[in-house]
Structure formats: structure tokens, C-alpha cells
Length: 224
Image 1 (spheres, helix red, strand yellow):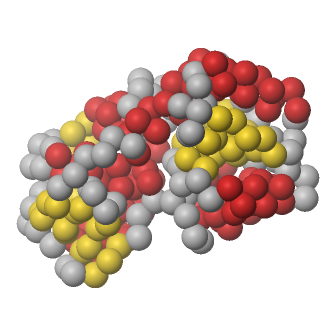
Image 2: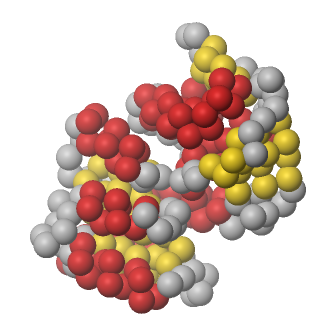
């Protein structure tokens, strides 16, 4: 995995070293940045960063600003790292386009597992064009259209729609969706999935109505 670059952004050198040590053992090529400005400089210089681990509270430019800047041009998977565990912070991260949100202190082994899960799904190489109702989903080109109009989705929104389409017309619980789309046993709040579904519906426009709410359970994606 030496060709898979992961950018670790944190103003604490000890934290960067801890993450670097665990990811390097797995064979990843880890690049470090000590603040937001340095992170952006490295990201646009390297061009082939596969995933970013991004701290929220940093000098010069905080993680939210870095996230917003990168999302203007890239869908690279981003995991936010923060010492703050408030619900509003987590929701803000998802609204801005983060793919994961991990509160410090965390288990390095769990963090590594999440990194591997995201990279495994993003590099799965699944191909095929699927049409469901007004939605056309192309795994190979990583594109989506709704009623013929291009739809810009984040990495996690694309994965969520992919899972819905694979399980068309099947009622899915929130726990089932989280465990499969996030690809690990999720111990967080089920509102994570509600936030992503709300954003996905909005981006799909009229086609968002194909995502049906199953009250008290979860969701179902239909082709009409």
C-alpha cells in the first residue's frame, strides 16, 4: 500500500506520530501537516492523496475551513478528528461533506479499520450503469444523474445511494445501513444516517422521493 497516500492533519505532533505509526505498519504512505494552511498546500501539491484525517481545532485555519475548501474541488474521503463530541459539531461535519467523524480519544486500531474500510469501498472497482426510476447510477465513472441532470455527491452520499440501489425495494433498518455503508459496527448515533439521507434527497430533487421513510425502522429505495 506504499502508493496509497494518507494526509494526517493535526497540530499535535504526538497525535500525528501515533496515527502515522499505526497506518505505516499497515503499509500506507503517511504525509503529515501541522495546520490547515500546510494541509491545503500539501493536498494541492501531491494531487494523489487517497484519504485525509483532519483535526478540527487547529491554528491558522481550522478543520472546517479546510474541509469546505477541499470540497469545492474534490470528493476525496475525509475523516474529521476532534476532541469535541457535541452533536452539533458532528452534524456540521456531515453537512460540510465529511465522510466520518471520530471523537478523541479513540482507539488507533478502530481508526485504522475505518480508514481501510473507506479505502476498500472507494477502490472496489465495481462497474456498471444502473437505472432506477429517474436515477441513473454509474459506478465506473462515479457519476449520478437525476432526471437527466448531473448530481454532485460526496463520497459517502455516493456509497449510500449505491447501497440503496443494490437493495432496491427492500426495507432497511438504520443499523443495517450504517453497518454496511460505513462497513464496520457503528456505535454512534443513528441520526448520522438521517442527516445523510436528508442531504441525498435534496440533491436528487424530485427523485429524492424514491427514498421512502419506513417509520420506526429506516428507509427503502424504490424505482418509482
